Image (cartoon, rainbow, N blue to C red; front, side):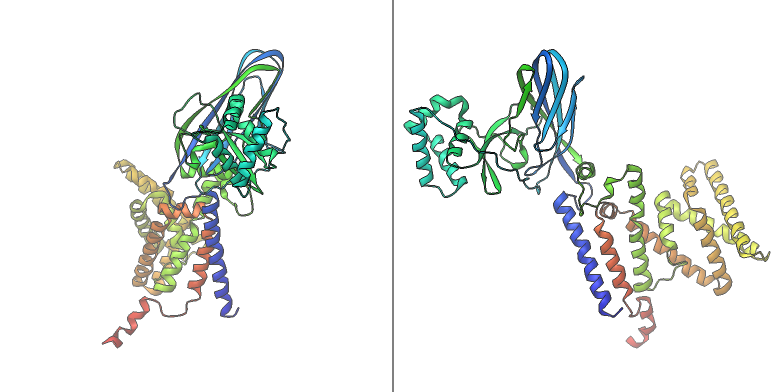
Length: 503
């Protein structure tokens, strides 16, 4: 590969990694820092009706993804009823039963995540009707529409002008006439007026999210479409207490009827809600588990047990990056190339100081046993096997002694991988015979220093959070490794050879 090749590949990997991280953060609200919490509203709808001793079908609208709010999980409580969540063509919850009689109560519960970056999900415009009004209301409506059209330019401005006429402190005679006739059904009157002006509109119902509120009713609103977009309008005299986008949950964004009940009468629906602060990880798991696309490649879709395994595996590139930096740029010598990474993993199981003390004790004792085994002139495989058995005996002995002295922390030494300890002892023993004890101290100290730095990096909460939740970070690490691998200059420790020229 030419010199230009690695540079292009490094840039591509770096941009790909940063792009995936940014996409995951912006699109799915995955927090960049650990410990963040997100608001989750637990909203419950209670449906009461009186069944008439015949088959019952209850069809209720369900909230969908909308501005700043993302429904996560839905459940229902309906003993004896069949419950289905239908998404096509509209989001509905449908309860059915062959026969029911007397007062009935059904529950629907949804967990809604507050996601400030979440945009509105497009909803197709409803089919328009051509309403007819009796005189003198028809002439009053025509006059009001003509006034609004003169001072408007599109569907949205026409709606604002029309609402302004109805909200005036001193309303016109036409408005007073219509209010007296349609006061109980003003939202539907406005929708019909807009339909007669060829403006797609519908009455939607929104829930004001306030912590601890019970027996709440929905707030009627006017939804108007302009091309592929839509906008909500508050009705005159119906302004809600809350005005933040994340505190107003539209329950039927498609404008379909909120509740249809067949085989019963006197139906009513009330809402209760509680605000909860969920950890970012918990909310994230719920949010991502239900979305699958090309860029949402996430290990959150795996079972919890496999996720725990990957949480450790994804830390290995960070430890390997530390090794690359210390060996290639600093010039630190270690016993084995990536043996410090494995030792750092063992430290994560034991804790740092317990692992360090245990590692030094076991390796020191193992070197004594290994020096005796070399005098026996054994074959390589038999000698390594003997070292493994000896390491197990040493670990067992230290564990028993620590337990007898009440040092329960010393029992963690059993978490050290025996094969890693055995190979470390074998390599250091060979190094002692070939290079002498000084080189053993240099490489052993370098290995321990590298392992400690890798442990500090891999055990940091930020690193664990980023590696687990942002797989794009692996591309960034790979780009950095390729960049370091392309370095051909002097290492930091090699500069000592030139210190004489400085004088």
